[in-house]
Length: 97
Image (cartoon, rainbow, N blue to C red):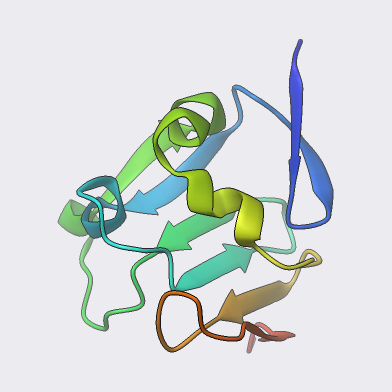
């Protein structure tokens, strides 16, 4: 097993993550969610996504294509990080129940 580290945590490189298809198409990550159960989401930050807009992708695949993962701040389970634009400051806050 290979592990990768980002957002202050270590993950199995085969861990599945939820990814907005806009991010897969090259849009920047503007919203990162680390759910209390350990699920992680990489999103473009736009509102109104449906299940058709989300893909389930292994982290190892993402690391090959999304170098911006290394820019994520420390995000504990139960928290999210959001920024207004690429290169902007991340704001980390608790996920609302």
